[in-house]
Length: 339
Image (tube, rainbow, N blue to C red):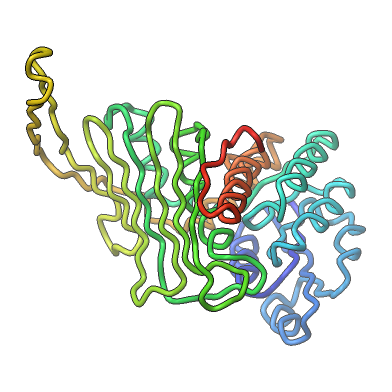
């Protein structure tokens, strides 16, 4: 029976607590929460768990095997570091840390202490993304030409991070998981309308060595909520709409065929459009966080690296830091390897 200690019972913490408490092979031993009203709610909801404002109570508890961190980004590094030093495994909310240097230190510390370090990139455990991963790995899409993502809605405005740090980790974790390749160049542009220094609208552009490009539109000021992810290949294309109640993933047998006979007709390239069937594959209908929690616990027992481990978190944060530099330089093209 694995013992779990949760830090933070604010926005995301209750979801984590519910899913860990529902697992048969683990026990929610303790919840650390400094806000009195949230601590009282935690105590009422989970009367068998110790509720404390003192983080050291969790670190010193021999009944706790892993620490789950659901707190603001600025606190991720120190909380995770203290847990790893105390020989606890860690699951930390995205992004893994505030800076790339902090993230890399956590990975090194986890490897040195032989601890499991996982990042809560929940979307990787949805039935939709798992199915898309199967499709990409099968090669059915052909050569992937582009990825286009829109993640917009009205709020929630964050006080400590901009819209990129809040929303982009979802899409960046998805693309690094699906493509398993890092971009060569990163560009970002944004605007601050509701805060003097935190962008609430942003556009990220990634360029890959094989010619593939990826574009992400992020917005806290949109009148509608859109969660759409497109992947275009030479053979087929995928549309993932997270807000669809059914048929979240659609695979289109559509594309173009470019013909060019000889050099004399180089300026008369013929483009034909190919249209085939649309297929909506069956998806596993299960809460993603439940799948993730189960996967994390399996990794703890088997001592193997999670799908979204510390190194995956570093890859996402590397791109995030490059976007921040590009923002400061008015959309300048940034080479990722410099990070």
